[in-house]
Figure 1 (cartoon, rainbow, N blue to C red):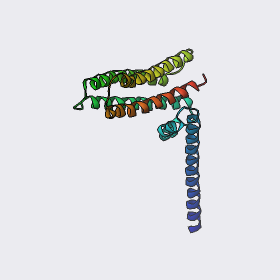
Figure 2 (cartoon, one colour; figure 1 turned 90 degrees about the vertical axis):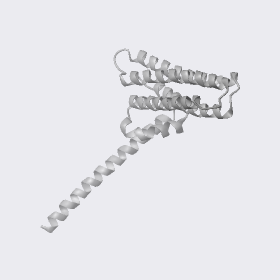
Figure 3 (cartoon, rainbow, N blue to C red; figure 1 turned 30 degrees about the vertical axis):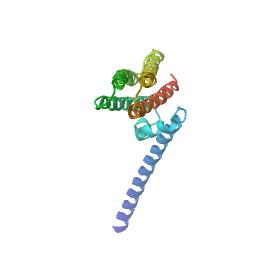
Figure 4 (cartoon, rainbow, N blue to C red; figure 1 turned 135 degrees about the vertical axis):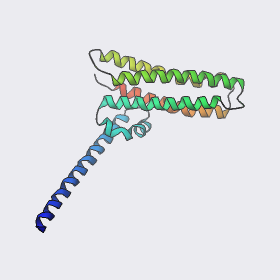
Amino acid sequence: MGALTFLFTLLLLIIMMSATMAATSSSQTYNTYVKTACNSTTYPQICYKSLSSYASSIKSNPQKLCNYALSVTLKAARNASSTVSELSKKKGLTQAEVGVVKDCIENIKDSVDELKQSVTAMSNLGGADIKYQLDDIKTWVSASLTDEDTCTEGFDEQKVSTTVKNTINKSIVTVARLASNALSLIDSLNY
């Protein structure tokens, strides 16, 4: 009876180890997929860092990869909106800085709206007009990049403190790089 229990326990242990090894292998495959896809983007390290934690959900699905890339970009845009909105409440801003911050808030809100549209469209992507849907998504992401760029253009036209510039730039650059990467991943979809 002891030998049979031992063999059963050994067999169970082998099955569990095999399942663990298979899961680890799949996880590595999915991470490799994300890393390889990110290597084709403008900012591959940022791409991989922002998407690697979703690799097991993305698996090897290019549409899911794009959807997560857009979702991560949308989250960053919302964070940038919060950061710039908080900056607008800061005491001691000059009139020029108040104007630049106000304009930037509007641009970021537009960017958030465009990214929301792109996330929704990517989630519902399909049907006979898929190329038109992708063109719409690309247009929204490109428009969000333009909005982010417009936000920082105010620095050139007005005298803005280093603190205000740096706070806005840090947020906007993150969003712009993520959006650029998302656009690159969307461009590589083959439909």
